Image (cartoon, rainbow, N blue to C red; front, side, top):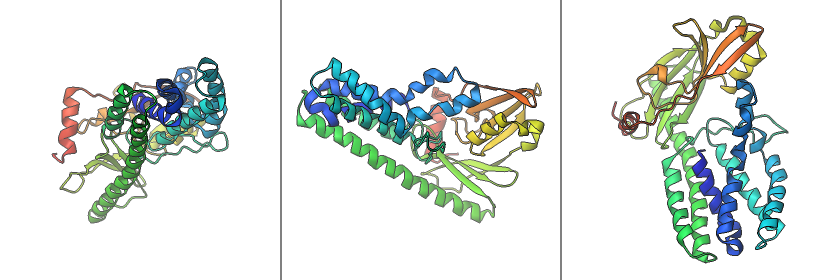
Length: 334
């Protein structure tokens, strides 16, 4: 999720857990603890591009990490603020970090919640990296909380409402994903399109506009579907082009990159004959311009037994034009 959502949820957690004793200090430290797992971005630059993909949302987002770090953070806070005990500050820190890691599991990127016991990346693919229908309500609630008198019941009630709303919204996204996939499967059946895997992931901003990928042996049927569409989904086709990797396909680094994409990728050569691998799971704001669709782009160079992989900057544009196109497409106009 985006940083602001994590900060707001951390603040709400702080108020619910310890606001009765610590007031605004509980909000502040809840926001800090709720942001800590994402501090892994500060070290990803020290790793080569493919490895860095697994460092982010890796061990720092695990249950074990939260259990280890919460007492340390709790001890530090207890030395600064005497309103609550070491145990109480630890409890606040633990809940804030676990809520952060859990909600990240609903995104497409994947979260290593069970490291170091398992490297599996949990990704329910039901919630965009930023979702205004989640962020705005809880942000408004917590702004109201800040302006309410400290140590009052209304602050804890409002903060509880923010957390309950988040839980309800997460459940809604799972349900909406099932509705979207049911509709897509029906359309694919009507079009007599055979596929081996189906992936749906929400675009940023809302939960009502989705990217669809239907995989077959050679590539993917893909398109966008909105909850407000009145017509069947329009699908295009993109080939995987795995053979273009040549001997690079034998490289463990390249295979790790393919593993990161969960097998949803395409390989292309640009006008200068450079080789690129694109992760297809992340929908952009470009609905017609296919070349701007690729959010995660990786250039493959070097020797075939020792490839050099560099990552292009994520291509997500939120200008006036793209926002207008987004909402036009959201409400079923195409």
